[in-house]
Image (cartoon, rainbow, N blue to C red):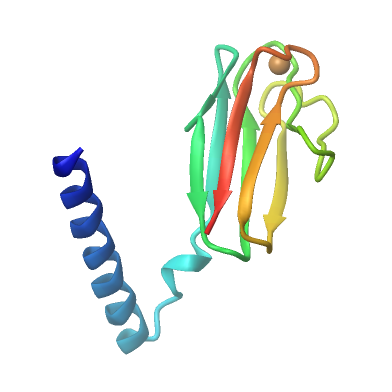
Length: 114
Ligand SMILES: [Cu+2]
């Protein structure tokens, strides 16, 4: 646990440094980097994605089987995504967003906006 916290701190410091570098050079801020969740072998990857408010998350289905991205609270819902289909959702409010696949309800994952 202590090791994990140290790694987190290092990562945050590096991201902050990169953000300053991006600001100095006029490059787009890191917060604008698109975030993608892959769906493969009936699994969302990563299972827990942490993003900043305002981030658009894109899901891409890599399976032959159709899947959905369905909010557990009804906050958002994709249609059935066939292979190589994608679904995008922009998260503006901080919180924990659990979602699942309506076709395979054992498939579950989370987006954390903070
Ligand atoms: Cu599914």
